Image (cartoon, rainbow, N blue to C red):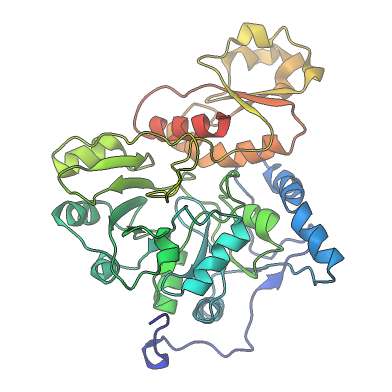
Length: 404
């Protein structure tokens, strides 16, 4: 069945209560947070998203449809109850997670999940991740195994997604018609409170137009999907800033790393006691369905072209005309900018973390790409970050953003 019975639902607040407010233009809902970055990300991400939403808005206006604006909700008990009811009605709710913001629907309601694909412009061949409140809920959704249970005990709640054989209760639209399903237990406290309030497993890909840079704040979601969805739960900036690690455990004897994330390959191999090789990226959509999200050759991409260099030569940058509108994004603040040196190109130079810390860089990556995308630059130049582990996840996103 697609919905829980009324008797099994938690007690919800009265329907008339509402602590959320409509967000229109530059008005910020009280209690809202600034997006990650240098303070300019909020305004610039709104500009970028208006471009991506221009066509749907024009079509709505010409057809006489009302242009709705999503409501931002603080995480109050009455708001969580209201959003839980919306999910039971088959509506979409953008939710905060520790990785990136997701666009959630009742994972057992096929019609509701199809609305996710419509809102994002997502192809039906790209499956969704099902989010559970507890690892103990896994048998309801998927066929588990010893390897999956070992990783669940070690890393859940947290940024790890497991691909397992699915149970028949999961609609085909969630798994893109495949006999497997991607599942995780998130750690974000506000998302977990909504999972508990709804009593539902929630399917949720990133809350952005398909293929674009993932959102890490409620403001990013509002800018990109604010006229396509009705509800956004504001939980502040995502603490990690990169999507979850995905591991294929359909065959526990042959685990595969499908997408790197904050849970590293080394951690996975230590937990499983065996090697976990990477799956190859898909250069173009396969004729069949994808095994899991985030596997396409080009993804997480701003509209401004991204050029990935093996290494950026700063001395060459210092010779360019800053009016050329070329942006350069480094891991750390370049030492060549210290003491006012190379001031003529300082506006062209950007960095992810002042000291080059990988966790800070991951947290800022998508916000920085969004800000640069809205900055009127001709190209965004990047280079791989050194190291392994979290560096692998950052470099994966840079490669896909730069792919052609």
